[in-house]
Image (cartoon, rainbow, N blue to C red; front, side, top):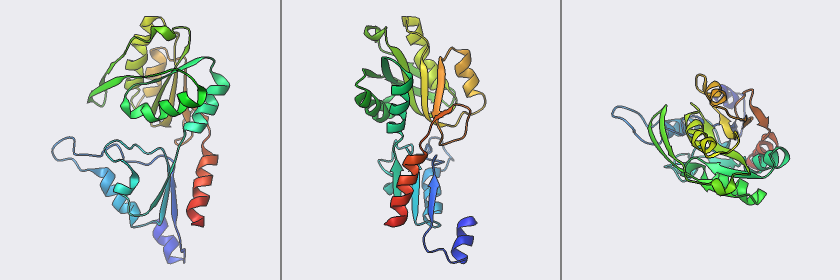
Length: 227
């Protein structure tokens, strides 16, 4: 309604800044009767706006936003801001990704910090039922665990990742997330199982926000409006 009102009042170009892009996780029909809402939402927004700026959208079965959006899209990466925070706050990190979906951010962070990394494998049986196959990384036992995921929703993925690592003898980890969805009491779940600290970017307002991506968003917005 706001977009339509702006058009009625003479706006020539509308850019939507959505730091967290909703509905992207529903990228196929997982169960009979479901809708593929990432596609429907893309159609809706493409009919209202000329451009979209977002931070690290959940691209899994879609390789890029252009597959479902018919407008110009600008993908902001939170990786540089994550790297700045880790460099300033964590000594001798080892960067852990719970699954292949986190690999792009783990690689960017580890390359920037010249830190070791490991990517595990996750099997999801349901929203709150996940299994993470953790490898033996005890060669890095003296380093600080930093477990990175793009979206922290139920907290189960992070919890199932670091509990076996703590049993190996690692100190309690830093849990790092880009989007702080935190369904129900996910942050409390992580605190109860012993997360050393819980840190997210400010794409979704949450007490764990300690990483500011506003500057990157503004740069992408300027690019969108000046093209």
